[in-house]
Image 1: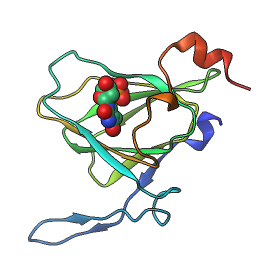
Image 2 (image 1 turned 120 degrees about the vertical axis):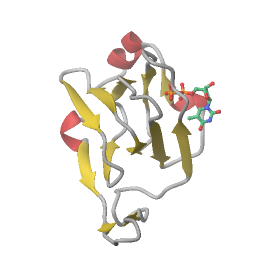
Image 3 (image 1 turned 30 degrees about the horizontal axis):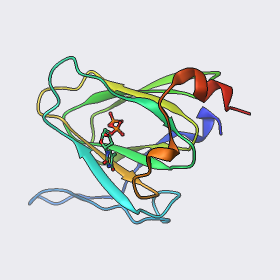
Length: 134
Ligand code: TYD
């Protein structure tokens, strides 16, 4: 899996003077079905999250509030995405190392995932991740 597969997805946005609405349907707006949702919040200034890759998990990362940077690395190329819109999501395919940093104060990072939590799906060691690339 290459970093070329990872991209910002423009999610549907229903504009309304009463407040905007965005929705995400698994398999429709994102290329996987959603089995799990988790979110990072109350992140202290200067903290970094991530620092791992997934063997088979597909994810969509959304800045529900505030902003942060997501560094993606497929072992050959690195790209950084700045997320700051709740109607944009970053699709991350399997076998991509990611690091999330520069959280703004009060930011919320929501992640939609294609599978339930499974520690065996993680590479938490960068060299082990590189070793297992094709
Ligand atoms: P981790 O995935 O390492 O967090 P991040 O990549 O956002 O920095 O998870 C941190 C801890 O939370 C780890 O002990 C596993 C646990 N966890 C769950 O129990 N369920 C989950 O769905 C997730 C994402 C993490």
